[in-house]
Length: 317
Length: 306
Image (cartoon, rainbow over all chains, first blue to last red; front, side, top):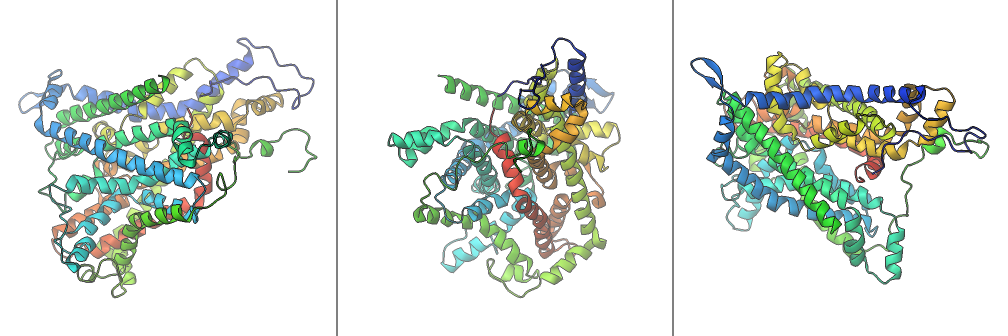
């Protein structure tokens, strides 16, 4: 990571015979600082209004409770205590954690394999392959879920039709035992390509001399991939891991939409986000919903931070 | 570029900041085996989309009686007509809203991120490091968990069920700022800025006339990813909006789907949901195909260092 630098005096070639102006709290530096603040200000203002203020407001709301008599009353951390002891919330958290532990390694492992295959330059129809894998990312998750919902369909879905043709029972994709796996499949389908592109872009930026040297030492392609390429794109892989952690914990669209076809399997607290949504908009329990949403955001931040720290420590040792 | 130009110019320095290090392939040998293995996986990615295309050509009855992965009677035009005329043509509004939300949010977020990322990369100013750390930390705040607090806040100031409620939160892309900071560090040479200063250009003028051009691939990358994020966003507009004429495609289609699945009469048909879905996918696919060389260049330098 390059440290932010003030501009150095121009080199001789582009401005011959000109000595760099002397530094200090000179008017030029002050001008530059003013410009920096001007350029950062629009983003920081919107950032504060749309990110910081809502989080602070949610934290504030979460400390109150709406009473039938007497309106809002301050209850301190009671909502958080309630959330931590709430079996519905807990089972949602366990469910998305399970989701994370199983689905993310599969998705990122496949994305990495595809990225390495593309980067090896040994594929015919390279562009076609890359775009085909990436295409699902351009499909809105709403549409992806609708599509897979039809494909999974127990009555007329293609899987059912094929199973019937060969005389097998229809696969119960939308049953309670299969639902989590069916959701994992939708998410995997949607995001392999996105993660592959991030990894592939990183691979393209690795200097080729490293491979030449390794080849000279007799390393095969697999050895190069394992010992050079993968370590070289660690930070890109870490980025995809963190995005996936965040994505798993905030699962909402897919379970929310499959709820319409499998209302008995997906309950109102199937994922923590679905729970927070239903608390706010079905039960009208805004304060408790704020506590759940805030707790979820804080939990995700902590988990991503821990992932980042442990991977950095491992890199150093 | 001709050799007569004496000093480095904007064009020369604007050349791809990450020059390609090798031609196609490290050894140049192509592998039929690897190709076959990869091609065998492609049906997984493409079959659902093929199904979507096939299903959009069927009428509501054929959808449930014919084989899912092959064509029956061709009813695409009828379906399209149904989609665009249902409920007084509300689908047109959904398309317009989606384009508006995604367009404004995409351009706005990309511009805010570009200006901020450039400033973080190219100037040292007292609060810079602290602000950047906060932004970096915000990448880890999930947008969906943020949506409910934002809703509650907007309800306080009467912004719910307005178009602003969808656009304003989508203008912030902390990841975009991170990407642009890394990108700007490489793409805008400090020597060039100094040369412009020597020529008497002000700092903002340097940004708008010199740097912005060099930052274009990064800008387009952020634009495209925020465009997709807003185009595909479901949770935020679902929470914020209650008037169907303000819905984007995602919320509208989901609503049609739930009425169709509810089977409460002739209000919405599965064939309309499916054909509408196809219509909503096409523009993004085109945008990605058309802009791919830009966003891939942007990701290659920006997304992955640090």
